[in-house]
Each structure stands twice: as C-alpha cells, then as structure tokens.
Image (cartoon, rainbow, N blue to C red; front, side, top):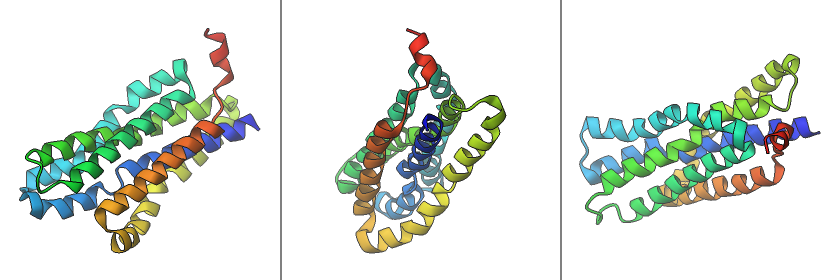
Length: 196
C-alpha cells in the first residue's frame, strides 16, 4: 500500500503544481492592454514561470534525498505563494506603479510549482524496486502531464463564469487543498530514518 500512496501523492503533487501557472498565459492577454506592454514584456511574462520551473528542477530533485516528501510540499507551497501574489497584484493592477515587475516576480515564484516534475520522479522512485520503476514513472509522468490539457479545457469556463481574479482564487483554493491532501496522503521514503 505504501508504494501506491507514494505514486498517488507524487502524481497529485506534479499535477497540481501546474495549477500555479495555468492561468499565466491568459493573464498576459488581459494585462497587456492595461499595462501597455510591448511584445518583449509580454513574452517575458509568459516565459518567466516556465524558466524558473525548469531551472529549479535540479536542486529540488537533489533535496528529495534529504527531505523526502517535504521537498514537494515546499515546491507546491512556494507556488501557492506566487499564485497569491499574482492575485493581489491583479486586484490593484491599475494603481500599482510597479505591477509589471510584481507580476514577473510572482510569476517566477509560481513557476516553482512546475518544478515538481523531477523531484516527483525522485520521490516516486523510492517506493518501487528498479524493475517496477518504469511502470510507476510512466504512470506518474503520464497522469501528471495531463494537467496542462485539463486546465486548458477548464480555463475558458472558469474565466467566463468567474472572471480573471476569481479564477485565480479558485486555482489557489485548488492548490491549497491539494497541498493539504498531499501532506496527509504522502509517506516519507523509509530510507530517511536511516539518515538520522
């Protein structure tokens, strides 16, 4: 059962990590006219969470050996902080003098959520013998990578019903609830007790 909990919770963390940046591309379309952004500025807003998510994969993956499930928790929590920062920036976007810089900063912080891919692979691997890791990691990557498609399908409905700010709030609630679920469900790899 512990093997299944490791796979389920690791996949949940990877899947939900995408929620922190799912709205960011749409955000750019909405804020571009408000902030009068040029093409380069808009491109940076779209790219920044992806860049930080990509660069943070290596150090976070290495930390799994020392901290176990708490690495994924930290990544998701940092992503949630970025998401909350984006919400507050969007609320006052027309009055904040540095709203573009804040969106870049919080977008970069939210990008931490997508770095759960490599640390999740490391985490899930500890619950399976080598001969079964291929199947487990295939399930992890396959299900986790459905997040962008699912979020893209849900996003237009959320935006139409809730608007941009409330869509971000709904995404933040989703991420917050999945963080709680992850902490409850996820076991620490058994080897960690030998490191103390």
